[in-house]
Image (cartoon, helix red, strand yellow):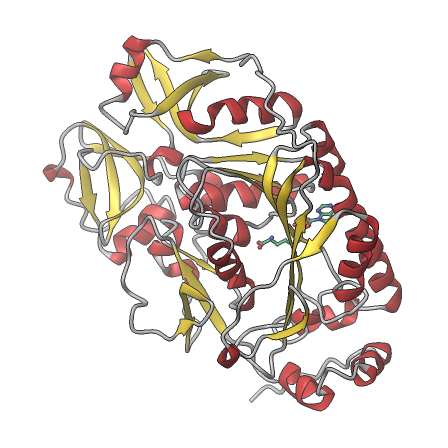
Length: 457
Ligand code: SAM
């Protein structure tokens, strides 16, 4: 049996933990040496019940623990966006959104540090369809994986941006909620990813704490008076957590917000509105979350300038074509460089504003292209919640689904004769995986090449 070498903790980290009166340091260190737990969160819009017998994450009703790690890549339902592999402590955002009743009115939410998309997909399941999520990632290469995960989630009330936090000053008083899941020193990940212990230095903690201050300072103008900041890190470090929250309150017109907790959950309230997750006290990794509210000033202004949309709307005739493919009620259809995007009418004005002021890399659901009065559907449409159930489809076995997701040309025992010519959806256990097209006796696989499962897995 291979024995994994233990990766030592930095002595300054150990000392800081030991000096912290509120931490039972020995229990914490032991927990960091043990195995991490595994959890997933199911997509509320894509109903699956395969995890119903698993233990539920106490603070998130649709998060479930897994006892063993499956080979996720080989599960077609993961590729269909039916669930997201997410660390349990981070699902606390579900409890926060529920307690703040953020699903009871139309709001604009910014997820400022969003890639790879764990919090964003959770937020989409906790807001009304009329509300808008702006999911932002400053690092371009990381924005690509964010777009993939959001697309798989399938909902249209979202725009993805690739901006620096300070760019949000251009849309003052626009958001009701800003989620800042800040880049941090990552002490809470020392168990799940032991190699991160090598990256920890006291200098990096100082750098992270300063960057977190800057991020909050830069985005605060875009928050409405009365709006919420949900600030989180995956570290135990007080400089990045409680001390930063105290700094935010000393510099800005912010107050912390109390949140009821069930004692049995094991979450430690370190101050009013500040919550610390320790792996020796609960089933989850190290995490910190603070809820702050911007005070309501006398001059409440909401930023709602009328922005002229610079793109063409799809003509009524062409919308008739789209009606064969997707739900068109209460949707606006925009033509952007040949491609049709479906945006919920309830937030299209807000999306136009975001598109005009920020670097928006995606909005709504990409429907496809119209050529000679025919729709060439996009993959995004196949896995979106807008697609009509009446589209021709074929339910595949698990091995056929994996062949499809690998873009194998010869799928085993594929029932070609059952299908009519043209586009059809490949499904697995009733969930859409993507389009193919039957042309005479041939099938063309339209699964996106960049998302395919690599064949040697
Ligand atoms: N919220 C994500 C999720 O739940 O999947 C995880 C976010 S991760 C903790 C922090 C993110 O902040 C990273 O994607 C990183 O690229 C981004 N980031 C790094 N530096 C940043 C900065 N100066 N301003 C804003 N975001 C930054």
